[in-house]
Length: 265
Length: 251
Image (cartoon, rainbow over all chains, first blue to last red; front, side, top):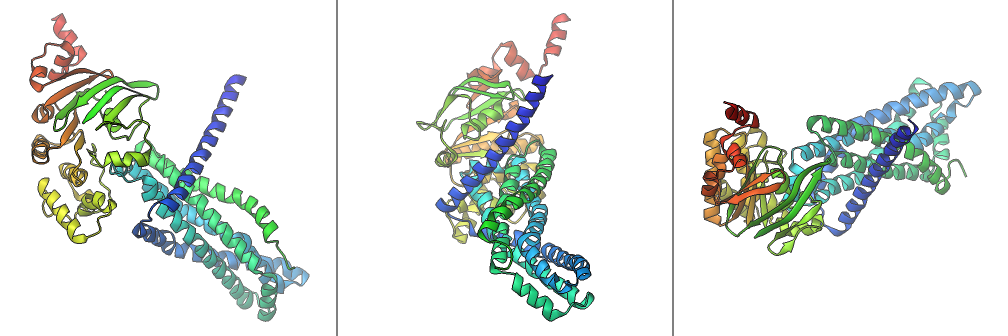
């Protein structure tokens, strides 16, 4: 009984580390390929459109409504102690450092990560990846490199957009619905929001992009058992990417706070 | 051209290949036959390095491909074309883009040259005028022809066919067999055809190898196979199950 329990726990533990190892090996292989082999520009630009351009609506809506609701909630609490005009500072810093990068990453994991995993997984189970290999094309060069580079370029831009829309939405709600004095709101926001807050948000965006692309591509490349396997790979890609974003966000926050400390100094 | 020595492969604790030995000479067409699930496709995938064996050697033109990494295998794979069982066409590309893919990846960018080569290949596989179609709008036989055109556009020395006639009606299957023969004559390619369609094997092959329980049980000319009295081969040729043979003995 105890032996079986240890066996099961050990098996799960080993499987987890094997999975982590596969993701890391894929990442290493991709970075090696980026620096040593030619880039397929057409595929790269296609992925920029897929990841960056087609995510616009999702990111704008996420940023806009998050900024608006966060401004409202902050005002409801701060107004009780007569600090309503500090709402802008809280909204701005929170969106730059946490909400912008994390929510954008979660939306991109759902939209783009799922698509990547499903597309590569379908290619795997229909022998298209074997066909690539048989035609002397290395799958990492053809499938993963353009996606990884496009993600590294697109994610910081999407997060910057989400931050800008979130702050703007918060401002409009504060000024036109909550009737906060616009001058004080803006002055507090500019005073408390520093370049380092924006740099922190964009650094997180870059890291989250890397996490999403490698987790999703690895899941696609290891898909098995036909349609069921592709479905499972897609689900796992979204769940694992989202969990990885949330977990890594904590560690990135602690690490980046040493480099870019929060608050007015 | 191609030598296989003592090839072994176990998948999910099941021994699929138990020591396969095989020789294929330049310009020869070898049909590998055997029962479904007997390891024919697994053997074929080993020949182009898509699977790695547990033991054994595969020599392609005096180079052992076992142990080579994916990038090193790239050079070997340029000498070998493979037609997959389901054709494995890239479903996001048109017929012309699928066929031109190997040339484009090899660095050919001139649209005129690519168009010309695609037209030539479509002529070889008798699919003229189908350039702009998407794979989803093609029939099974057409897909296999496009897959074949894609695999031979770089003029490989050897072409591997994985069940080229499976899932096709007898007329289309016959046209695929003719195409294989024509390619061998016209381009002098070595061909290895994995099939369990005996008509196809007798139609196209100079030699036939029967894969049984993970080993090559019979190797010889089609006429030798037709004249054999070996009960295992007889059962396969006549499509006779063990149960049917038992009933006949009883009666």
